[in-house]
Image (cartoon, rainbow, N blue to C red; front, side, top):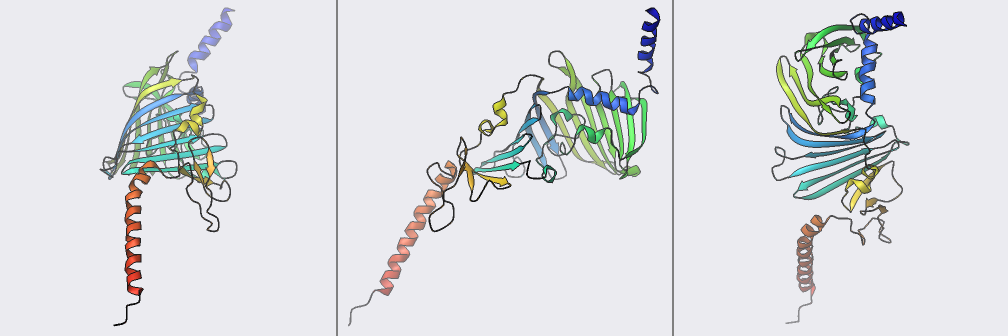
Length: 353
């Protein structure tokens, strides 16, 4: 019994040293750790700066199995000083995708896109959404945290020159995984095996000239019960010829893992959609136009003989647009009445003189 024990112990010690763990072993440990996150809530604040744009905002992501939802709030501080904020809610399921947005400022403008993923190619559409488990693996929440999945960083078939070595990042020992993609892009990934197999640094270089470099660095903290290591703060920056052109800081404010998430959050009723919002469906829901009445999707009735939809009963226009439109309606009717009076006087026969 003693001999097998020491053999197992020696094997365990050996497989933690360079040369005994392959790149695929390391990647599998990272992916397995993140895939253990089956449900939860992650809320972040971000500050994103580019050459022309500057966004500060908040984003909360809910996920449960294959259901995902992200609520994004971005104040318009630079683009439109009169506008107060922009809110976007995106909800993804196995067969449906819904994107809703409203812009608060000079009135409220709303938009709702409803997609049936069983009848369209999901790859054709960008919902501005990413797997919430990717914080620290992929770049930034607002601008670049899209299109990425765990498999886009690890276990790729289009890479060569895969190398695994001991290194350091942030003053701590870690693994460094590097490889080159067929398009010439160079990847360096730094993994902290002592703190939950987390990616603590990633560097992406545009071929070997280092002209364009994307870098992500993450700080780790423990969340939940039992405690789990996860990025608490991420910094992303892009440099071109040594000059930083884009950067973003993402700070995790609230986090909850593997706890039940209210199923209603993944429904139209739970998305807080303004009643009267018109629906753009892909593919179309049917002939005519549709809108959300606050409780269900409804079809707009058509005016007999005219063939175009009109608002009825429940109200298709927001209260703000109604308030803004009624003075113009009075002015329009007044102008029309005045024009009719003038026209009638011009046509009225004059008495013979």
